[in-house]
Image (cartoon, rainbow, N blue to C red; front, side, top):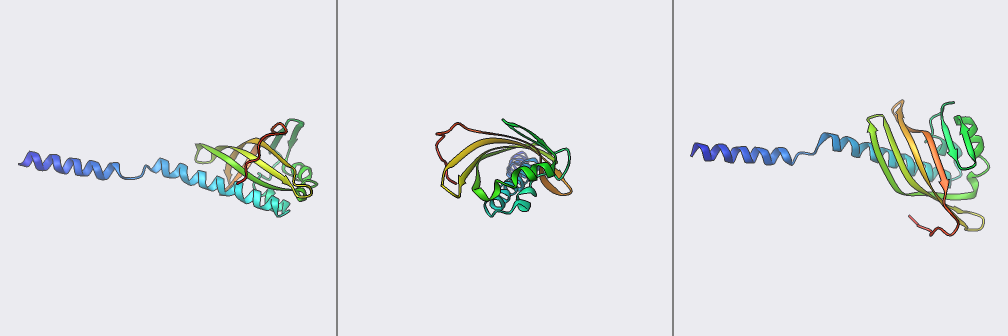
Length: 158
């Protein structure tokens, strides 16, 4: 009887332990949620013609790197100046967001961006890979590599 009670207690305890969420998984999920929120906030700011709000997603540093097929922009201020003429022209959103947490302060975000031009409704899309770091308590982009997809790529609404 004692052996039966021992095994019953053991399996009951094992069941309780295995149903507990893995702290590592919870941490990764929280980071992914924070980065998703950063991405969505930047898209909302862009669509609202709020360049300062959009730029909050980027690390305000000379070390910031933005790479596209036509060249590389280095530094937060030059990137802001590059975006300034474009912000009032389109509605932006992201889909297919995939986040790989590297450390508690570093993550890689892959996503598809979508733009609909406000003036004529034309559509463009592309892919972006973002190296993000948690700096000063906030997740920011420190390296952005983006490229547009060929014309005729099917539109994917949110």
